[in-house]
Amino acid sequence: SQQACMTIYVHNAGKHNATRVPVDRHKPGYWTSFFAEERRQALASSAQFVSDEEWRELAEGINAAIKAYHPFNKPYFFAPCCWPCCCVYSCQYPGWVNGDIAKLPVVHRLASRGIGVSWINGTKFEPGGVVLHVAANAPVLQVMQR
Image (cartoon, rainbow, N blue to C red; front, side, top):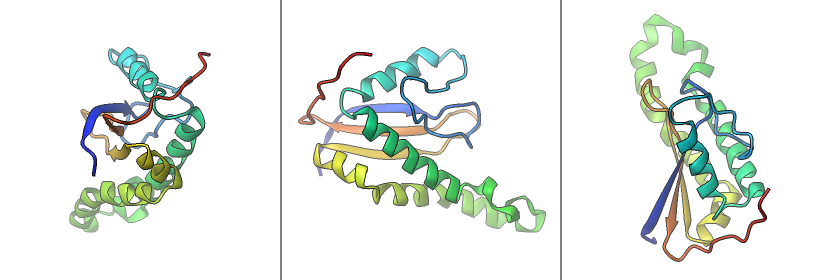
């Protein structure tokens, strides 16, 4: 395992933790906020190491995992008698999402270039998002400016 020399944290798009990873880096759909510029800069930094096509594949894969496991997509989550079970489920859900992410072909390609990927669940106070762990020897992509 390589030691990361840089961490890039790209927030989920939207306002609530049920929102998704932006699929299009050039139109991320961020709400206007104090952190909007910081979020755009993180997306721009990610473009140094992950191509637009790879980013789209990664975001779509993460969003599919979020949709599959998100507690709000489970009808029993809102049943009062199951609240303790739902709390346990909510704690395990990010691990399941990250388990699916680890199986994505794009994640394996990125890992071969020294780039690790993980996802952080959003909270009431934190938007959550994708974390890229970039090794010191990860190649920088030659990208054309839009």
